[in-house]
Length: 227
Image (tube, rainbow, N blue to C red; front, side, top):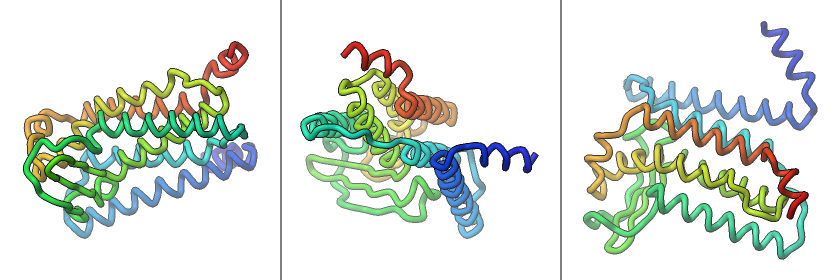
C-alpha cells in the first residue's frame, strides 16, 4: 500500500508533488500540536478539535494549489476590491467583527482555554465595536478572499462559487464565534448551547466545497468565452 501511494505521488508533476507534501506537513503539524495540547492539559480530544485541522489543511492546500494569473493593473484593483469586500462580508456575517452587543471587556487574548486552531483567539469588546479573531476561521476567510481574487483575475468576473462561503460561516462559524464570545462579551450563551458537532461538520463540508469550487473553477472556461 505504501509503495502504491509513493508511486502515485511520483507520477504527479512537480507543482502537485510540492502541494501535497507541504499540505501533508501542515496537517501533521496541526495534529501533533493537538496531541501535545491534550497531553499537557490532560484534556480529552473531542470532535470539535478536528475542525481547525480540516479548515487549515484545506486552506493550505488551496493556497499552494492556486496561482495568480497575470492581469492589468485595473483588473488587479477590481479583483482586490471584490476580494476585500467579500472578506469583510464573511467576517461581519460570521461574527469576526461587528457592532458591540455586550458589556465592555477590552482586549483579551486566549492561549490555553481552547485547543490549537481555536487558540490563540483575540477577543475585544468595546463600546461600539467587538471582534473575535479565531485563527482557523480568520485564516479560512482570508483564503476564500484570496481565491476569489485569483478567480476574478482569471475570469474578470465574480463567479457564483464564492457565494457558497456565506453558507459555511452561517452554518459553522457563527456558532463557533458565539461559543467563544459567550463568556467574554455576552449574548451568545443560548446560541453556543444550541451548537452541535453536526453544525460544525456541515459548515466544514461547505467550506471545503467552496474551496474546491474556487480552486478548480468548474465552468470558468465556458464563462470566460462569453464575457
